[in-house]
Length: 132
Image 1 (cartoon, rainbow, N blue to C red):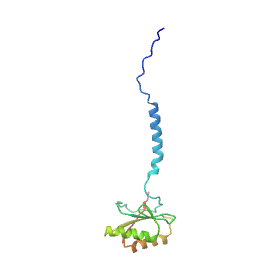
Image 2 (cartoon, rainbow, N blue to C red):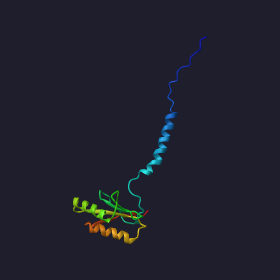
Image 3 (tube, rainbow, N blue to C red):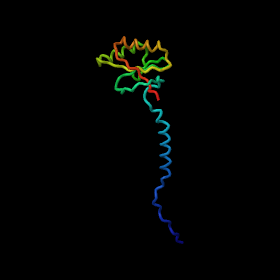
Image 4 (tube, rainbow, N blue to C red):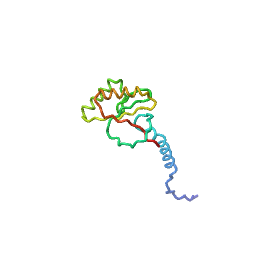
């Protein structure tokens, strides 16, 4: 008995490929917001024109009174002062940006500003968010 053979199917089944791509799309959509760099701080909003942020170091003050130099946490004001002095020796016209959480009390922010000025920095920029 001779059976008739079916012709070979030469089409590519793309269903598994589409499934994998949809899973990858979902993974990237979920992880993309988590890849933001920087520290989360609630900045005050003001109606001033934005200035371009260059490679100027930032002192960040979080709501729990933790202090960060660039992206690294600082142990105390002595450590912050040492890092600022090192930066100032590299750049004579040193400038620093200060990002302070809006929930911090005024006295704490002024205490940090005084420490920055005592370390020798006179040009301090305050970072805010623009009004919508």
